[in-house]
Image 1 (cartoon, helix red, strand yellow):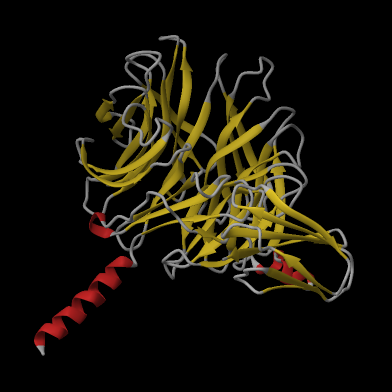
Image 2: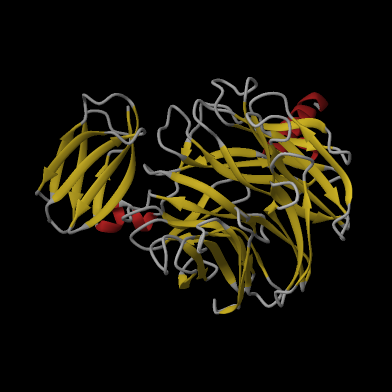
Length: 485
């Protein structure tokens, strides 16, 4: 029966191709943001960012591992009592993970550069901070040939309170090898770093130009010992900012934005440079409102690129807030095809875009989907040949918090799940329990204190949907997702 065989083959082929792209949101009743992502040898991914879902005193840095199709594997959290942000996650087999970010739980000032080292299972090995009397924030980082770390960002530890570029080179143990603070009398910052070889890096950001009296995009060539060979500035007129660069095919490809046409409009800025900083091609694009090119990654075909951009203008759907597009661009830096659009009733963000081993790309960011409440980690995977996922609402919410943070780990048994009329809560310890049932918008809709080993809670008046049960016992807090039918 050849027709049946062909039909089965087509179904299998469709299923196989369907696994190379996905769009997923991860959260657990907190305010959660995705900042950085790395791919592992088995095609799985590890994500970092900041989250208040882990029940710390403030937002914490985290690692979230997902498999090649976005299924949760494990997660862990790091930081102190205040706010800690993982901006980039770096990985090497048999070494483990580094989280580069910033923290105001530790250090000298308001925020400081923050570096976390874990093993390959995400278990904390050490954490260190770097900074001066003001605040310092990391925007990008790379692992060096000796498995140390090079972090770039900004600092306001200045006498005029303006921002300077800030660079920290640390060894594999987190000990500082050197730091650099570079600035003018106005605001300067570094947003991107990409290696050329084991001892050479290109850094990009923005720097004030005394010639034009405007902020210009800048690229510099830096060696591993901290010496700078050259720094060059880019931008026609107005203020120009570079968000991301990528070294590919012996060129530096980069993206950013400018207000060159009108102070009330922001236009996308694309460029290609040779390895000496000479301009091969530059282009500006925009129509109305605010449009920024955020990130760039090489396409599987040489001299083409995936570029992620944000738009808050008449084209934003459905309400004019910040939306995200990811599109394929030609070597002349012109749009060829849109690969994904992320648009909800609240602002959407994308913070990193990296190439994947199958010839596609994966992006990490955040969104606030109107039907799920709070902010969520957002992951969009585009497969080879522009195989893109459906990114618009409605969505399911995947877990971010692992079993070690759930009610089960506290000896609490919650059943049935799904529940209809009653919810049973059993405690191994017999201690007093504080119970809250929270909806997907973070609103507490039922609160109860119980002190029996087994307790029945009436949930018949609660509407059908997805909820979270928060349990506090002996000063510890656990969480479990609950479906009410």
